[in-house]
Length: 478
Image: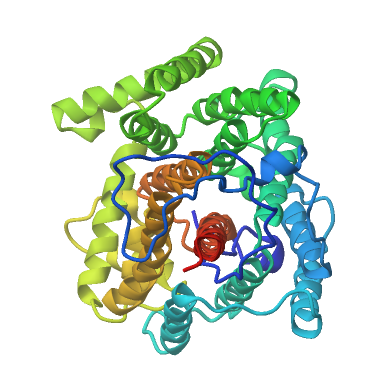
């Protein structure tokens, strides 16, 4: 479901790769980290005897230690707090202050990495087609919101430029999720019994159960990062609670797309885990037990009805108020819209108008009629921006994911824990991408916050490796 035009306070915002400079590193610690038999890329230096890749967690026990709290960074944190909590209407002011602080300040500077060039080109395309389409949108708010998204992406890339800042941001984000969306869902279910048709949700952007479930996947990835990376027992215990509660919430929403995405991410985690797979299986099994115990029986009936419908090939047999059948018909309409406007699409935010027209044509069931959303991120972008916009948008994603994979491979020999952090965020993004098959998230800021976090972590990791290798060459006298 496309988020409403809520501007800076909406979930529309952030993503891209960060081009950060190397953060200050502590002096090398004793004991090398050997990795025998590993083939290194040309120019990469093997760990030096007597030196070890410095880990921030070894120097600072708590996430808030060692952080450079610049004005722009603090405003960025305030913005994130506002779009998660909705306690004050200051999201636009917070982001505006962050933009001003980066522009006028000396601690942070604007960074424009490769993915942002593709995002800029994407913005040009949607601007040119916004009013030129036959299915034009007469309200400027959706386009204005995407420009705000673009600026928020740049701010996130610019301020998440060191590992201490990234570490605290992940900790701060989890705390914000726990205090508001997660707490709200738990209270609505167990205390207030405020569930719509047995499906739990919260409020504002988290009001729709499907969107609410999808938006739990990013903090779930952060929870895994904190649980595996932090050394404090208190933080690890709290993050483990989150690892049990958030999957339970996803099941309580009865969002089949999110449940499938969660299963896909969990399966990929077990397959790619390698060393320590036995512990991973035990952990996943323990979380599964919690989910099975607390998940309502309606979840299993909803899933089983869809399974039987899939096996019979007749979606009408699914006992879900024709939800699955309706979604399939909507996808047919979205594909027909794309085929009619394959190059540049029908224009940004114009799809509901086009859907209303195309759904009345022959071959489409009446259940799909009306000005509806595509209920699929990829079909939505394809129908609204055509192959031109879709190529730019997906290229931006690729320029974030592929460097992250390479950074994960580079850092594994020096600090396996940091490689694990990148992998876990990528797996949560994979789950979110699977969930995007069943919902439209291209205009949600949390989509780009997730991408920005991965991109920033990639850039910081590469900078740390480069700095460490440079120091290794100096110690070798080369």
